[in-house]
Image 1 (tube, rainbow, N blue to C red):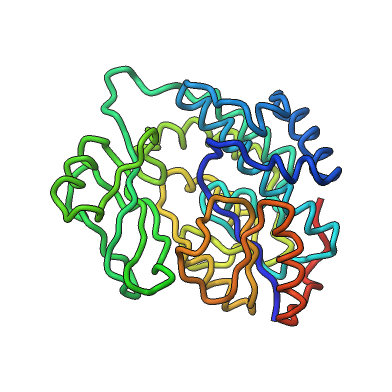
Image 2: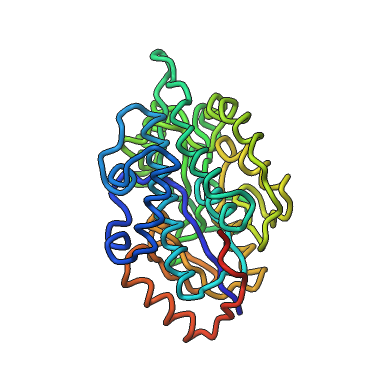
Length: 320
């Protein structure tokens, strides 16, 4: 029985990591390093209000989220916790790739910080948006509200809820189409998220993908040192080419938490540690126990749970 690390996606719009930063010297040193690589102050990474410009806001938010996730990893590594498999969603897939040894930490954070240079959308571009949707908790390809609605895309599948009554998905696309869909379906079936103005994991992010492609191509990717689960299809990423393909497609292709945790289960994972706050606690079903780690008290909980379950912690030494 082995340990898996799960990294969520999303953007750190709220202050994250303050308790860990104040408690652990290794986290403080880590944030200083991220600051040096990105040109952001530690305050900007930890807790300051995000910029208002869309792409710059997205960039700083991803730095915040990834910095916390790797900060959690640093603390766990100091207690000799070693994952046997690793994976994540969206930004989390990129962070997991870094910790699997496929690219350096500096390369990851320079890429995230550099995405602030992506041109803002034209003023006459129709607004984009994101919504959470609820559908039947069936196996296989998820059935989502608005499947035939122009301008609405299935952007993410988070799988069944913990009680097994429904499936949670993320829709993205044109804000007007999402709003109209929410008004057509039963109340609470589709819930547009306020302030989310980027249709992530849809073809509408093609301009971002094209702008970032040369920067991704310039990264010297390496083969992952441990099994790295894809969030874009049911697959273990084993080569540098696999990881490069993930980075290139990540912004425009739909993601699946189900693919990640199913793959981990097949790799022998029997305890998952969820790094940071971006995967909500207690809402989703997992095929193994999970511990969410984002504050100091969660570190002891993770250690205790691992020992109680008899988890093999010899996965691989923590990677630089």
